Image 1 (cartoon, rainbow, N blue to C red):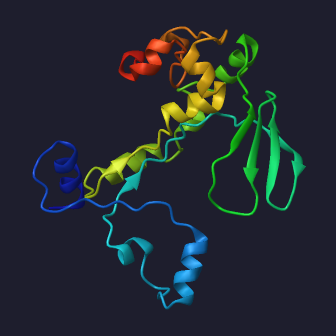
Image 2 (image 1 turned 180 degrees about the vertical axis):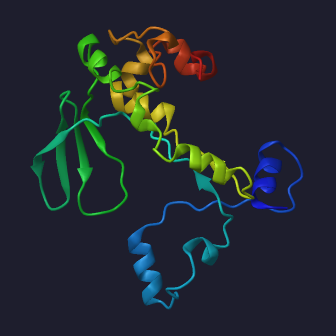
Length: 201
């Protein structure tokens, strides 16, 4: 089986010839340690771990343009950044990987939601690269799976309004249906939090 056939067989509950393995996060600190311990420079990282090749479509699904932010406080271990909507996050500054702490969420009322929504247009020209047609042509005969990074529906909403607000349904932000033309729909009712399939994703 090719990597593409194996991937499809796995996710269609078929009978793949073996487990399809995909690479996870590649941290530089791990790579540097492995090099000190004798890892050769030449082979690709995926080959060393024996994971299967896969590709990602070059489509930008993020907030665009991104919210500008500035550092308002910093120490040797962490920093606090504030975005242009007033949201504040506290992040590690002494390590590559770590969950940020939200001190204040960017979407707090209708006004901040409208400002963010303006950056979620799915048909914004920048979302597809100029070489998009060539990319599609080159990918038609590939033998590996090809995906698109869509982030996390849960993560996006959590980062915008906060889990407690979303779960309780107490926020005043109640976006309309899909015809708003945004990348995804936010639903803040407690019912949708329990049954995400009903939110239209």
